Image (cartoon, rainbow, N blue to C red; front, side, top):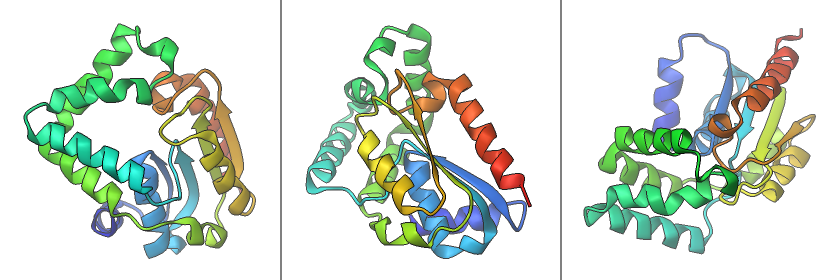
Length: 195
């Protein structure tokens, strides 16, 4: 995670910026906040967690890595889909195909690297009280990978943070409910832009 955040910081086109991260992107955002909090003028944490993986979560990730290594990479997406989207969206062919294509574009090797990076990430809980920029914490109400309770604890710990809950939505809120998520992010950016 530290290397990923370091590359992001070196590649950022501006010295300061608003930063939004969904899921693993949230884990990277926490690492950016550890390395260079003075560069972040606003923070959006979507469907993520400040906690390190539990042993159970790490075991599950290792099972998915094993499945991918055995040549069943595309089967990982099928197994994950019920955890990624609201149950009502599992029959949404366009959404499901988009998710599968995204996974295919990432590929097996990158997926395995991502899972290992996620498993090795530090606990960001101690960092939360140090975050001082305008922050929005957003969650699909039915997110089973990073449940609402995780977002409530982040919003409570970060001074002045706003909690946005997207109804009838799972983990991939930006894909499932883009209009609602876009509106929440606009409200956050409006707060971020205030002097």
